[in-house]
Length: 135
Image (cartoon, rainbow, N blue to C red; front, side, top):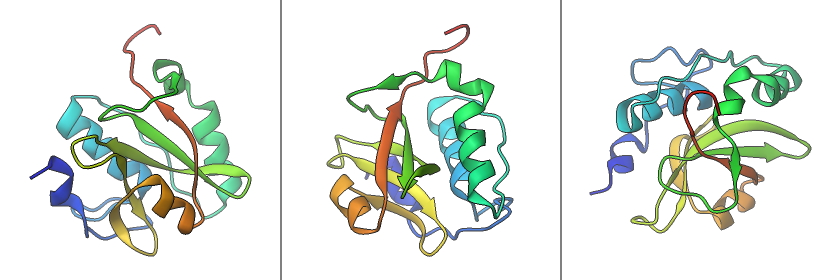
């Protein structure tokens, strides 16, 4: 069984302060720490999507995560709905076919391939790979 399967169905939480409920960023932080040994900083999950989009765009951590064209297991996937990137998940694949494990407000933690994401109104903005200190 793929490591991602254990998370499918966990509930979404606006505060992301679970231990077993998350918002998109708190879920990505937990997965990156537990499965890839990466400690990511907290980002708030405000109700206003524009500040969240700016936080994703402008956060200093982004320099350690350059954009890549072809995703690999553990890469962060930035998603947008309409104009702004406001959601994030983790690439899980190719062992499971390649898709995004993410925590969505209406569904909790789900695994979706790119075509299913599009069917739910999400567009992949980009794939981002950790390169470490001083990138």
